[in-house]
Length: 394
Image (cartoon, rainbow, N blue to C red):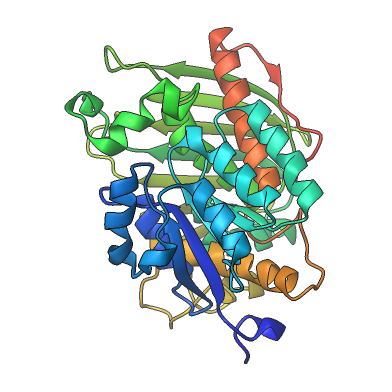
């Protein structure tokens, strides 16, 4: 089968961020090339020019395509006969908008880390730019790439759980139980800084993942939100714990709980969905199993690549049952689904833009609305606020 369909070549990737000391940039670079459909050929790896150049050999990026700023990269790549086909933005929140907007306006496809922008106004402006440009724009809500998450979505949308009544989404960590940011730890420092992270801390960083997971699996449209956020570590500027209650249009209730101060917890993402016919439960730290329960029947345990899975899960699976797949593979599934659209655009073919397999610009806007309304509701002591954007994926 030709690489990337009719395009018949690897896509050329550019990376923004990911310089020495970074975490998520290396994840993007690893996941992006896992299925041999792309090659990392260019990058602006740091806002520090010297570090940007010094980091390039770590990714085998040639010196002439190791740029000292994203603006330099956008201008230079436009002039090349072999420009990058897409760029991945793996930088702190406050930089996403300007970087993404620059590349979108230059006609480049973009994969952006989440939260998509610094605030809702930027997200809505970026949406207009993306719609005008016609580029492919993905947002890295990577947990939606797990095979059993896609199995859960297929089962819900096929009616196997019946009418959905309740969603419980949790993302529980413990790494910020102390003020790690005061020790100049890079990951903690920017995530707890309102100037870099935005108006939310924990809820923006990981609460958005928990909310997005429930939306992706069920397709339910939100109507209202009530939220209470807390900062339990003295002196911290942003929330480190919070719970939101979401009322959906069909009457279902959803809860989103996020914590970064729970002792001993690592990356415990949990989703439970209750329907009138059955319920399901999935844990990110045990991603290769999903439990489906129905009163009066034995519990069913679905395994990744096991018997009885649908096409969505099968298409996201690489190796036989019993061999664990996890975080990097799920991340790669976001990329490979995005590549289907990018390859079509580069080849001049039509592609879907809203209801895509991969999280997209509309999910990014909804994530920023989730943050905005959660923070505002918390300021009003949990007062119910409208929670519905004019443009929502289903």
